[in-house]
Structure formats: structure tokens, C-alpha cells
Amino acid sequence: MQSQESNQIVVRFAPSPSGRMHAGNIASALITWLFARLSNGKVILRIEDLDRSRSKQEHIDNILLDFEKLGLTWDEGPYFQSSNQEAYSEALEVLRESAHIYPCFCTRADLAAARAPHEGEYAIYPGTCRHLSEEQISTASARRNPSYRIEVPSETIFFDDILQGSQGFTLDAQCGDAILRRSDGGFSYQLAVSVDDALQGISLVSRGYDLLASTPLQMYLLKLLGYEAPNYAHIPLLVSQEGIRLSKRNKDASIDQMLVSYHSFDGIIGHIAYLYGLSDADRPISPDGLSKLHNIETLINSLWKQDKIIWRP
Image 1 (cartoon, helix red, strand yellow):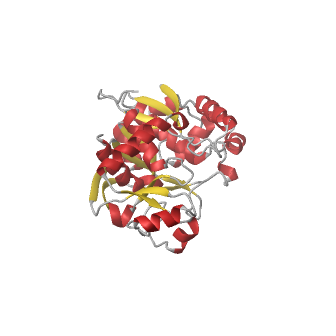
Image 2: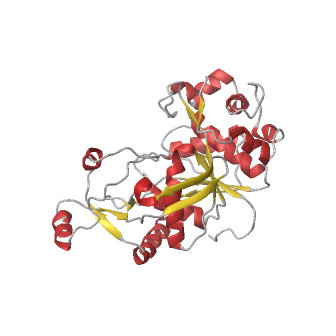
Image 3: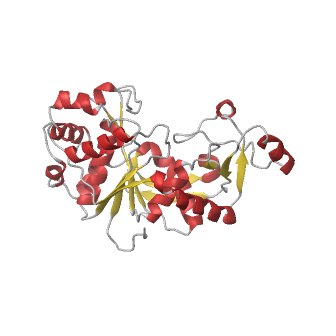
């Protein structure tokens, strides 16, 4: 696949096939779709099935069907991360030539014990295995397979987020040394999405606010791999009344329950659009209908500098 060379905006839907869609997934996909349609852009569908143990064909089939029924159409794909392993392997070898990639033998219990306050969704790695000797690596390798991490510098990455404004993250202090390949041999999310975004020509990464802190690390990986970073737009998260991100555990936000509550797929779109301030009334509307109410400027203004939206069934 060739990298995108035109000036056309290219976005992606990137669901993980571990269950049915819920309100949070749908909100992110809807706003991503609007970015593309309001700019005559293109939507690529990518199935992020790195975790083969949780990725089920029935979930993939349901995701595709749900997107179609919701009116969230795509222009290219679906592409599957499980089919792109060679590209990830090649990228890892390139990174080995330009950065310090080292084996890490820490268990989840080790990391939990060392966890400190941090920004983003993941704990900052304390560097336990960063400078092991050859003898220490040999001894540890006899006990368990290592994961592989990249040592990041004390460099501040700046970017302008389309929805969240100017951002700056210092890699070592706020991101930490990221896993690129897991101990089971699988590639990490951070490496895979960076490679996918580059090779699929994604020019705008539109996704949830919870992934804001992943952006500087992915920008750093892209730079080392010789690619330009895309633009970013981090969408306010749908959260519960307690401020916790919605998940598949929130049954009232499941697509099946929303169909009962709002009677149709357009009813689901209309309710989510109303919560996000994209519609002045809680009424059924299709994505196409919603796109006629907005341009890029009004879309951005409706969501500007918000990190969360309270879910109200």
C-alpha cells in the first residue's frame, strides 16, 4: 500500500473486534466521519485485531454491520492489523538502527508495584531493565521471554491538536520507554498504529481524548521511521456520571440497549449528536443529515477544548 500523497484528508475508523459497539465507539466514529465528509475526505476502515485471543470473527461481522446501519460509511478497507505483521517487523528493525531497543523482563506485578502518577492511560515505565548487562540479560532470558522497549530521550514533542489546542509532552517524563514487541511475540499498539497510519496515508487521526498522551510517542516513532506525523484531533470522551469512561460494561450505552431506548439507528446518532452539542434537539437524524447542519468550523467550535461529555441515557 502506498502512502497518501495528495492533499485529501484521510481519516480512519479503527475498532478492536472484542465485542459489540457502544456509545463511546459510535461517538468517536461519528465525529471522525464528519471530519472526512465535511472536507470531501476519505474514510479508511481498519480492524485493530492485534490481540488475537480477544478478536472474534462474529465481532468483526457485527462491527461492519453496525457501521453500515448507522450510516457511517467508509471508502477503503477493511484492513486488518493481523495481516500486517511483516510491516511491523520491518519497522522494528529500522528502529533498532536508530534507537536503543532493549529487552525488558518486568512482569505486570513488577510494573504495578513501581507505578507512579502519570498522564494518559498507561503507567510510565521506570526504566528497570534499560541498562542490563549481557550477563543479566542471559540470566533473565532463561526464566522468561522478554518484551522489547524503546528508550526515549528527554525531548519535548509539541503539536497543535485540532480540538484540544497546543500540546507539549516530554517523552521520558510523560510517556516513558514504550513496549514495541510483547513477550508473547506480538507487536504493540503503539508500533502497529504508527506504521498503519503512515502506510495507509492517514492525514488526520481523530480519536478519543484518552489517547492524547500516546500522540507524542507515536510522532517520535514516525520521525525515526522517516514519516511525517499526521494531524490530530482528540475527541471528548463519553463518561459516566462518575466521570469514568464508558465501556462495554455500561449496558445502557450498548448498541442493543440504545436501539431499545431510541428505537432506530438514526435515533442513536441523534442522541449522541445532541449530547455533543451537534444537534439542538434529541431527535433521530442520520450522519448525512447531521453533516448538512455543519461545516468544519462549526464542528470544531462545538467540541473545542472539551475532554469529556457526560453520558445521559
